[in-house]
Image (tube, rainbow, N blue to C red):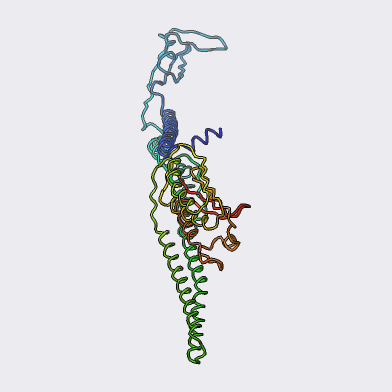
Length: 428
């Protein structure tokens, strides 16, 4: 029963509507036929039978007494016994020849005019009812059919869509639109849910981009404080020393050299921000390539670069002969940034491993260096950082992270017992 009900509710709108109209029409026709049949029978009962007659028999007894009897009969079998009439006298049946009596047959008039006023009114009401009842039943059937169709197929999905529209208008996308029905309204709700989810993901990406921009601005603002403070401090010291005449030329030369270094650091920060903006605006051009051939082509340059730095680059892969969709330029640029960083800190060896899993290209890069500073691992969201021991600002990692996100992936940093580890995944 539940299965039949589920199949009935899951019918397409057109088929459901046609079947609903068909059943409604059948019920209306059946009820109309019953009402008309009843009215016809009732009217027939109101009118006298057209085959009925009054038989009047007049008989004269031997003593001259005339007796009259009247009978209501029908044409047919009731009149077959007319040749021999009988009467009962003292409990004894006496038969007499029909010629000794006189009889009269009077046909009953089967007309409306012969009815009583009450029967005329009832007769007319039946006639009106036979005309009006089918029309009323048809009208009621249409209304009930529409209400049933709306309640079963339209009410719930329309309410869900209306509520979802209101939520979207309020810029609230954190909800789900679920309507489990295999009809057109179910498909519409499913499409609406996909649109909501797409808007949610787009807004999520947009907010992440805004957050990253805010982090970039905060990082740059934070890191610009040191060189700006150095420049301000030296300029104030120069101004005070020159006015008092207490500063030597040797000291002035040292200050100028430090100011020059601070200016170069400011220039590096400006260049890092430019590179980040350029990375965000880089278009994605994916094409179909063989995974093994791509890895071989990409890693050849890095093998030569590692040899020049007296570092062993060990490349391993767990790839099949399947094809993948990837932007080679972005992959090369990501690996170039990460491997260049690894070459700077590695002692003897860098391992590079490629594998595919669930439409993701996974790349793991491990070097045998000292690993990432704790300040980087603790501040995972910070894109640009500086090290007191090294002027390198980690711009390569920031650019690689942005490019990974552009390719639908991510970049993770960690330390192993052997050194630094960078895990890259790109959606292919």
